[in-house]
Amino acid sequence: GGGKGAGVVTGGQVVKLKQGKKTFEILAKSGAAAQFKEGKISVEDAIEVEGVFYDAHKMTTVSSSDLKSAFGTSDILECSAKILEKGEFSLSTAEKRQKMQERLDEIIRYITLNFRDPATKRNYPRDSIEAAIKTAKLKVDAEKPAKQQIDPILDKLREVLSIERIETDYVIKYHSKYGSVLSILKRYAQVKSVKKDTEEYFVCDVGISPSEFDRLMKELQKPTDGDFEIDAVGSGNEPKAAKGPSAVLKLGKGSKTKEKSSGKAGKTKKHEKKK
Image (tube, rainbow, N blue to C red; front, top):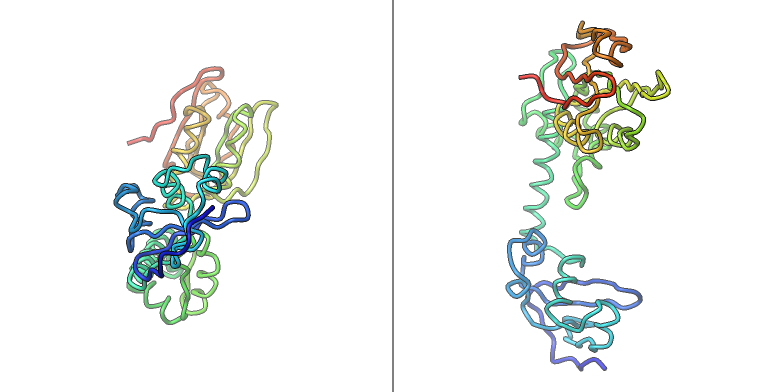
């Protein structure tokens, strides 16, 4: 069975992991759990006390049979590494403050890059966004990724600041054999319409914000190996019929072409940025 408590421990940082009906705890050095997750330190350097406990403060040790059934091993360091990797832990006040500041910086950076003043058509400087966030008494969640918080933050921000999204419209064309393309587009762009122009090709109208463009291009490379076409709407670059499927793209008003990829039918031409 498990060991009895060896007194109460108050220092360090408790990391907990629930496996089945049982909760397993370890005592890590203060701030070490986050560093371990980022690969900066080893498990040996991360733990304050070597042991896995039912309650780390009371130091009631877990039986080797419980460890084995939960982690497939009774090796303390291996189990500790798994708990550090997947477990939950409370941050110190200083860590919380730092994490909050990092998340706030990330949100401000995202807004200054992807939104602008509709009157001047210029991006807001960082100071303006920071001041507006304070004026609107916005609460930022340090634990939530910035992108998940943007929409509610923008709703509040619009009460004190005139703001619009910067977005360029593109037409993207790809072969239907690349089934994952649409889900990638939905993740990194605003998909406005999707239509099948032939049995084999899909044509999508999308709006892409500046911060997502390079990431989207990179993600589209994976399933297609560059075998897709993208044109900025209104670029005036009507592709020639000789270039194959892209000839059917109907381009409307918009901005200049930023990106172009076209391959002859049946062949793959790598999608590259024009310098």
